[in-house]
Figure 1 (spheres, helix red, strand yellow):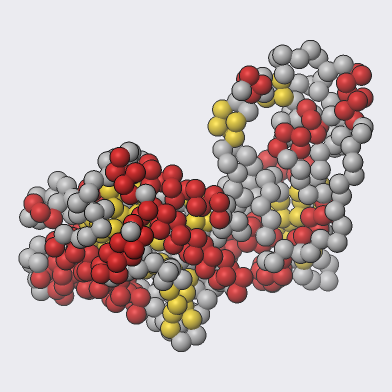
Figure 2 (tube, helix red, strand yellow; figure 1 turned 180 degrees about the vertical axis):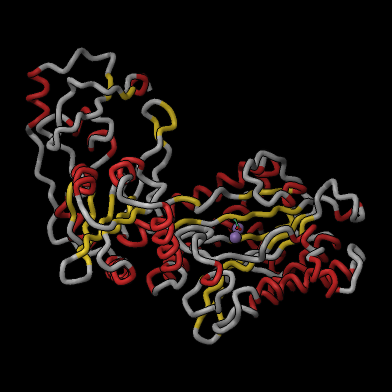
Length: 493
Ligand code: GLY
Ligand code: MN
Ligand code: MN
């Protein structure tokens, strides 16, 4: 690692100029003398031509084109700018892993950093879409081996010609994009929050309100998943199921270490079969299960307790699953754990049955909440009648969160959609949502008998609305208490 200490970014005005006369950001190599003219000359030549030809379009290219057509129709005569986003520095020359913006990925299928999609309005109507991308590194000026983002350091990029074949749309050098956008006239909207440089170039031309309308439209454009997206979400769920199996097989090692062993085990599956986890895995053993977003995952794993595992693999195309199972670490539920688990299962069943075309989006939440309220009244934890509990939402002390959300490229997908298009919508075929009721008895909740305290149960599945009902994309994992026990026993035998 001695070499790594030398790789500190330094803005060096002497470092050279790329084809667009922008300074290259040279890595400082303290152990080496300055680059001699002879070395610079040697590094320019002797490299094979690796240009690829005859590339097939990405499988999602035609779907992305259809989405761009919808965007074009919604904003006639306006220039639309959709950045992928930039690297974020963690420290010095170390960056956080890059994940392209959801809007950009949805509209292009591409995932490269610094990229920008521009829809340019055409005089005769419609738009021409162009992907502005980082091209291959310049070898003439040394960028490819001296720049911190040069290909010699970070890997080969697609040439613009290769990218055109893969994405099915014209590609240009992104280093020209800000200047071109600054000089362009006419109405323009940009998706904010991803690329400060591009936003700065447009600052005099855009308004927050109009840009918010664009973001809302793109969020709503993702409400109905096409065939490609459903296939990717199925892959995400299938990989996730394998990740849950991996975890069950190593629960003894987690008991010997901590929740981190579970997190690491699931992450291995996510990285091998997909791109990443779609959100921070919640590996919550014992009373941690009552903390909704327990991602510290640093607690003990003890036989006799429950493990609430909420985790999802994100595919290489960036679609994520969002699945929760609550497992008895010993392999067998205690009687009270089973009672609570079975109640949540019953609520989830009621919720899933309410997912069908023509139903109100809220129906699945209300169906699940009714079951949970009934159970809480039956157990004497809240005073009935059930209608009063529901009207005052008193069950929420223990159910805490909404029963689900849209799922897709983002775990909480379509989050900028308008209320009327999302929570007040009618379900349509192609929507994918989670159904995830839970009951959570906090360790310090004095309103419930002591034996309930520290029990948290959630069951979460990813449900596709079909023409005649729904399909559970995460049905590869067991859900009933008996099936969970049998599945765990088989995996550990
Ligand atoms: N994993 C976060 C959620 O279930 O919404
Ligand atoms: Mn969820
Ligand atoms: Mn979840």
